[in-house]
Image 1 (cartoon, rainbow, N blue to C red):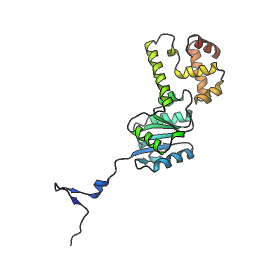
Image 2: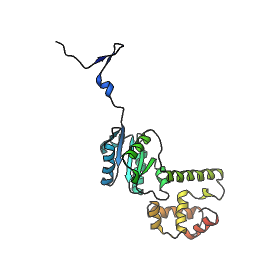
Image 3: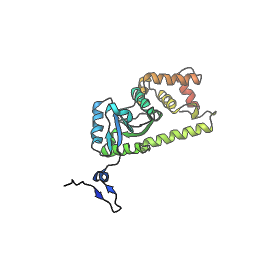
Image 4: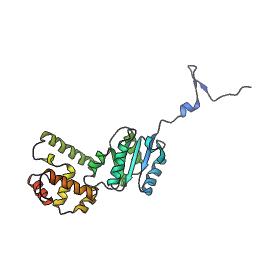
Length: 231
């Protein structure tokens, strides 16, 4: 007697195996980055249940199609991580964040982030949509952040049309935001907390404004910006 196989002959006389009919499509490889192990575990548990996702161990994170960075807020350490991930051409980065302060959106975009999801909205379905969108080359932003981004793009267009005039082109969005906070009486530490930058970065930005515009101090810079409609 000869052993039988599970192969089935097609009408055309070719052979198909059972496994070829039941193979799943390729899954999206995902690496989760979070300094807080509790935050990381929450996202991992949500995604682990989805057949569309292949979660990678830390040792294999470099080959992930999608890197998810999960944080409370964007500070200098997070920016360093985002910049490092940006240099990996095999991965696109998404950010799951609790709060995104004034000016932080521009910063994360400069760091190569393709999509943003607020942690309060990060249930299993939303995380899956985020990952699949990133893997498909799409960008994802909450509605209010999209409005902020469009306003920033508009200011860049106006700057390009009038590069020599006294307009928003004289200050970047980050510089204008920080100078506006100075005008409201905030000190360096308060500005740092609101913008998610370090105090050193805030000091450097304000010093750059004063030096570039040949002003005397922060008060002089605020007065100059108000007179010229920059803030």
